[in-house]
Image (cartoon, rainbow, N blue to C red; front, side):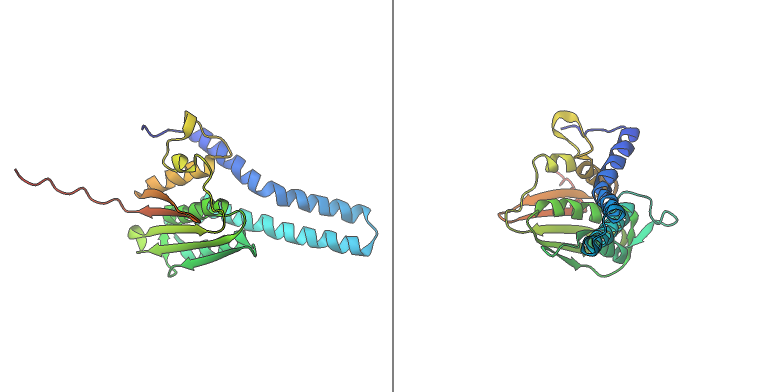
Length: 222
């Protein structure tokens, strides 16, 4: 199947829409909390509003920090990103008692696109276990040889319909929207890294892998 090609302007617009979608909820909650503070005189209600503002501001900050690494040009002065920073923003994004993050990787400076790939695979993994579970990140190799595996394990783990096709660059119906752009972008980043992306679905887990393609065996002489 021919890989779908998205115009650069459309890609930028859809990614911007995705980022706005990610931060609009906590920002809206901050606004609601401020409105309560303006109108409410009860001390207990004001404390609740302040707590809402604090938690929502932390959530918005965590999501923006994550998006900055996953989609943006963070650290554009260099060609690599610290994987420790990637782990930190991922833990900040999750911040959920129902989800445990296991990060199996020695800290290193890795190629920028490979770190972006790790973060985007983690986003897909998060959507797999809405009821909670464990996300395990395994990074093997170093530098240009870095390979990635992200596994989401939990009750009723499920990969949404069409995600595998989007990662492969062959969206069903030949179109991508703001809802599906993140999975499509993940595939773009993986191919830019020269890695093969595979999705394995098991009973209670989904495994996302980015591996170096196997070299084609040499033809044997007749």
